[in-house]
Each structure stands twice: as structure tokens, then as C-alpha cells.
Length: 329
Image 1 (cartoon, rainbow, N blue to C red):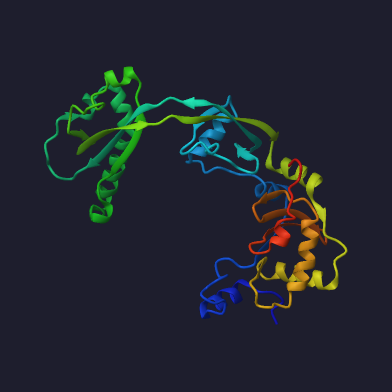
Image 2: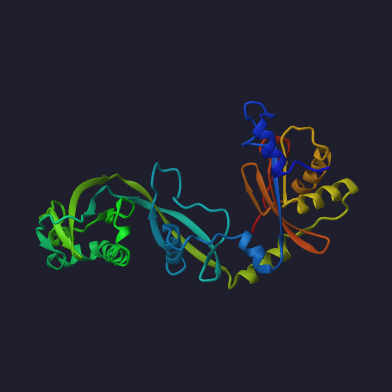
């Protein structure tokens, strides 16, 4: 007998329409996940954000750790473009990221440059080397992409088919008045087709008016020199011991751990609902490390081991309304 609604049972029920018009398949009443943490570093990894190295957010974090960086919002003035609920990691160090309003960016003109490489023998109007320095700098990444494509197709000519067509690229860039004066591409291109790395590349330029936008300044304060140090800090400040459980609560929690660390409740009259209710009462009585709408995240100790517990009270307002976060992480 399965002691709680497992992923397998939930998916099977959705598949045969038990929940009625699929209601609840995407949104169960509650979803709970339990992960064992084996080290201080593991604790820190769950409670920090590590930006993707190629994302814009990563560059914001990197600059913020040095001397701050300014970023404009991408839409209506509703807040900073990057809002996170936990510290960030850069070069192995943990930082608290701060932001503040820093005025408004004035309207400006940016240029959208579209490039398409071709494999035919169409005529070109200029060579890459003949372009002004500002244009060579802007197109250099595209030149390298063509060289990579050329190397790949040279190794395997079969790659030069429709699925591996020559590169295309579009980028949007602001040019200073001096750069516009020096450029052969903006505001109007002097050439329709440029020879780049042996390929004719057609060029299309259009201007884009960027409206006035809010600007936010990001700065960072070091929180811990390493992830392990931050994990130890959180363990000492915010871990709570899960003790005094009833037999039903203990059996419930251990069954969740054993069943891939997950529990779903979706109105099936599952026999674990009462035990979950008692367990949930214990959780919401403690401030969570993080609260996001109806979801809370806790660090707890049970039988000598550390666990990260996440509960999304999707349709259980009686618990979601009791969620509270720690005063300071």
C-alpha cells in the first residue's frame, strides 16, 4: 500500500481523467519535496542563486561585486529587471545583491543590424578589412561564427545542408555620435553586401527608438567567502529540529523521503492527508528561509540528518496564509 500520493499515482490518475477535465493535474492541492543535504556546501547551493555564465544577469552580478552597475528595466516601471529572493554566487563567493532607483534613461536611438551569410557567388561591395574600426568591432563575433561554420562544413560537407545553413545574426546597439560619424553601416549602410571570411554577407539596418526607462543601480556586499561558510552560517541560524512527531507524522515524513522525496495531495481522500495536515502545522509554525506566494522553503534536521523541505500550498490557503519568512537570512 502506498502511504501517500506518489508522482506515479498522480500521473496515472490524470491519464484516466479521475480528476475531472484534468483539473488538479497541473495544480494539485499541495506539492511537497524533501531533499537530503549532505554538506554545508549543499545547504548553500539551495539557498543561493548562481547566474548562468552567459546571461545578462551574470554580468550584472559580476560588475556589482566590483563597483556597482546600472541596468534599465525592460518594460513598464514596475521594478528592477532582476529581482531575486536569495544571495548570489560569483567566483565561489556569496554576496547579498542590493538595488536602488538611479533615475531614468533618456530616450535614444539604437540600431538593429541584421546579417545573413550566403553560399552563392553574389557580388560584394566591400571587404571586412575595409570597414571602419567601429564596424569591424561590432561584426567580429559574426566573422568568427562564419569561420566556425566554414571549419565544420570543411570537415563534413554533408553539414552544409538546410539544417546547417550559413549563419544569420541580429543585434541591437547604441552608437555614440562619434561612432555614427565613423561608421559605414549606421545610420544608413554604405554597402549592401560585405565579404566576410570568404562569404558574401547581406546587411540590413533599421533604427529603433528606445523610450525613457527607469534605471536601477546594483551593488553587492560579501556575505561569506565560500559556499561552505555560508551553509554553516545558515545551519547555525535557521535550521530547526523536527522532533516530537507522532507515529503517523514520522511514518508520513519517512515515506516521503523514501518515495523520491515527493508528496502530492489532490483530493483523492488519501490516507496520509491527516498526517500531512499535522506535519504542515509544524512547518508553518516556523519561519521559512524563503517564501514566495504560497510556497515555503525550510532547512530542518531529522534523525541526525539535514533536509531541505519545499511545500507549495497550491490550493490550501489555510496554510499559505500562515507562511512567514525569517526576519533576516
